[in-house]
Length: 61
Image 1 (cartoon, helix red, strand yellow):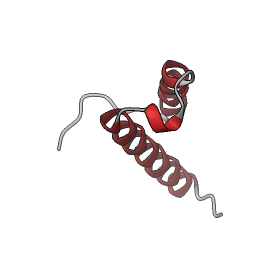
Image 2 (tube, rainbow, N blue to C red):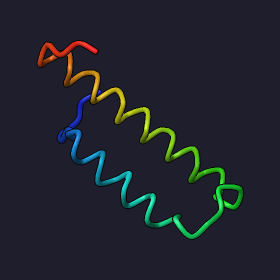
Image 3 (cartoon, rainbow, N blue to C red):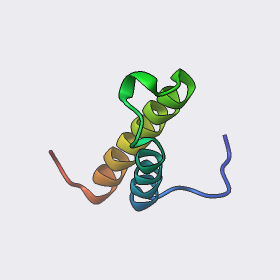
């Protein structure tokens, strides 16, 4: 898949913050399933980007 833009680690941080602020007033049980799945996808993408960046920079855990 070709992508015109690539999100950086800071972009993922901002997106997760926005998501958390948007749903902060809701108890976790009231978060719609679609939104919950989107949050998990975003979290997994962010984790992959962090791992990719660490590999590129030669950083070990």
